[in-house]
Amino acid sequence: MPDLGLEVLLKGKNLVRLLGGLWTALRISLLSVAISLPVGVVLGVLMTRNNRFVKALLRLYLEFIRIMPQMVLLFIVYFGSTRAFGWDVSGETASVVVFTLWGAAEMSDLVRGALTSIPRHQYESAEALGMSRLQTSIFIIIPQTVRRLIPLSINLVTRMIKTTSLILMIGVVEVLKVSQQIIEANRMSSPNAAFGVYLSVFLLYFLACWPISLLAGRLEKKWS
Amino acid sequence: MKKLNRIIAIALTFALAFALCACGGSKKEEGPVYRTLDEIKQSGVINIGVFSDKNPFGYVDENGEYQGYDVYFAQRIAEDLGVKLNYVSTEAANRIEYLQTGKVDIILANFTVTPQRAEEVDFALPYMNVALGVVSPDAKVIETLDNWNADEQMIVISGTTAETYFTENYPDIPLQKYDTYANAKNAMENGNGVAWANDNTEVIAFALQNEGYTVGIPSLGSQDTIAPAVSKGNETLLNWLNGEIEALGAENFFHADYEATLVDTYGLDYEESLVVEGGIIK
Image (cartoon, rainbow over all chains, first blue to last red; front, top):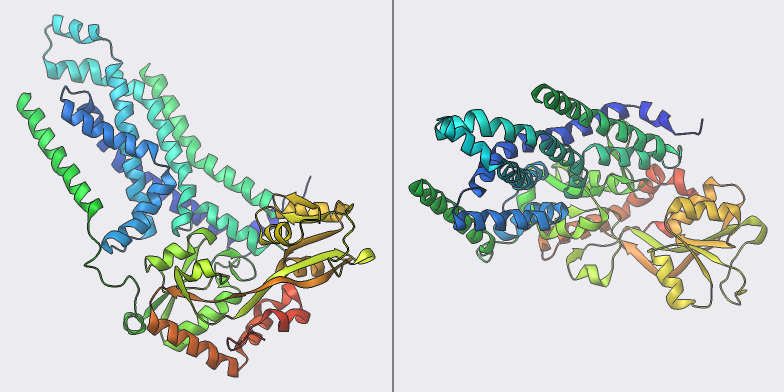
């Protein structure tokens, strides 16, 4: 068994600090998910409407967010807003804003894709059965769309959780930053600690994302 | 449906227009980004940017407390100002940004003074020296770089000041470059190169922790200093800091700081060459 330097995790409050860091990462990403998914659904539906102007606007928003690296967005919101208007946004708030904007943009495109992938004949058959537009949406279109959306949106949610590793650049001490602090504080006494600590971080991210994947799998099975 | 579309279009236009206004917003009506000395005292809190993962200068111990040479000084600053200390965890890459936006009042994060940086921020008096150093095995200690044998290689880490310095000043010395500290350390231990050049603090620490190595050249190249930095133009805070550093010199504060935080890593031998007391470089 190679020396993984795992003993550093048992020193003082290190384990509690690591878990606290994980909670910070999860709090930020899950709050952003909770806001961005509903907003993304609404925007996605709007994108399928036949209004060129609305479409162009949403397209612009989506492409802007998609092209910009998240790191740049974080710097723009955290430092840029202070430079431009003197707002003193905290690192956590800035992270939630960026992750929400990003999540909503990506979600809207997923919803648009799922909606347009429903074949025309589904609408026509519903109409032939004498269903109203509302009935068609509730009984035919939405259930099929939701089923298609589940794997895609789970992918987005787990990506949002993992991308919180960037927010240490705007001063938010999350799980990765805590792990770097632990490794560096013990650089001399346990030079191998990097392996053990990063391994633990890997496990923590896994434990955070895995239940979400499980839930998605179960839902997919239930509705198939 | 038409009507709904139109309403949505109008709402989105307003949203975009607002966003654009916000982005293009003027910044001229703002005052300075920084807080003056009086404003800091009034608020009762000073924000100091420190490293949280650079042992032994600024790091967080196993109880979640900030520790280190820079932190020791930060605590004294807050104490003498009579305010609470709020630590902000900074990275090497965002230290200037933090000062330019006034999100911290002072950066105390192992900040080396360079002319380029001095255009962006204001440095106070220095409190530490840095230079390059060369460590080599006891069996063959390298004490000079003159008459270098071209068959022998010098180990450096890519992207460090050591690499730049040797490329510019000693182009004849063959370099063996490694990406990480760990790889360079392995190479040194395996005898792949005859010596290793890095920041002198790093090579001193290496020689102290590993038997059989000596720092043959403890100070090389331009002597740089480490100093606190404040936002450009923050005269009141800068003057107070300079006064504070001079006053602390009378009680040998930075020697006490060294003995409390750095002695475990560097030993007592390097105290005089690393510490700058009272802002005076000898």
